[in-house]
Image (cartoon, rainbow, N blue to C red; front, side):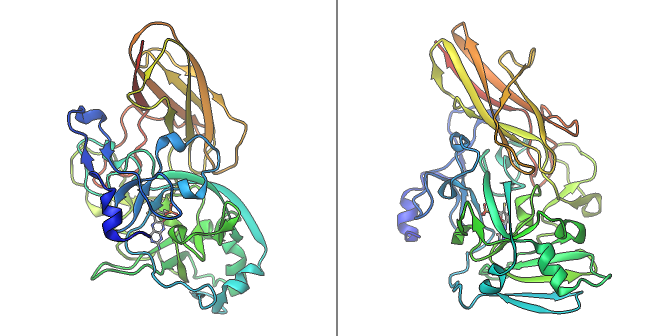
Length: 386
Ligand code: MTE
């Protein structure tokens, strides 16, 4: 990575609201990033590298790895040698294992195309605003992840009947008293045939930003479930107790009043993602000529399938079905497009609304919660037609 000084040269005001833009629709401004291996991403934090994918990049089904967002809670491991790396598997199992990368490469490989979204994606759009990384709309990307199934490794280790949760520990460098990045998932999801110990992304070994040499890939679930730089897997009797399970990554059991505190006992851990669409073109604030305007975007629904995406250009009075692109996979977003005939000049708001095969539809207002998770309100861009 560039030196901190070089990097900061390119930071022109991360996490600062745009002056003069009405608060309701202002996204935090961020500089594009110059990090080797990353290309054109927006810096949301530099102390721990948090890089957002501009929505204009949501134009390919698979996100090229240099365009894939990055979310780190702490420093990336500074020393990672593939030869020395080991993964320990312990806890409620018959046979503890210590696996090298060579050991993993001997296990049958499985591939999953997954849309990975940070639970905090869209946090800056919640009102009232909430603290935390002020993500715009682009803490989400899609890639083909490959590696052994976690199921096969756990089967080799022999899970005892008492094993009900599977914990992952990352090799992050923990600054000061910050608790280490450890989270757990229930055994049913761990044993799902699509849950991976991913060693590859888009056909190449994982890059360091994305968890080299191996990460968990828990498809359809919030990104935090997919622990990077794995060093330890432990089968537990109970859900792991720690900062990133509680108070982190929990959601109110019942929607409360925006701005209202929620008691920890009235929350549950976040698991699968919800239904959502984002408009990738035209860009917010674009000036266009009258005539055909093709509206593009992406839509995803975690473990569910996208059933339809609709567009409105008259503030929600009427909705029109978009075309869903051909590429699809169980946990991956669908790209969509809609040809709009912009007949009259003026200011327009384009709205997009996704519905999944479980009947969930994007709401006009996302459920407010103190940590700003799972923002999924109907998306909108404002444009001018002349
Ligand atoms: N794993 C470790 N070890 N440390 C982390 O900070 N961040 C999590 C998850 N896995 C994180 C981690 C979060 S919050 C997200 S959204 C995803 O990684 C982001 O994955 P990416 O950086 O490959 O996009």
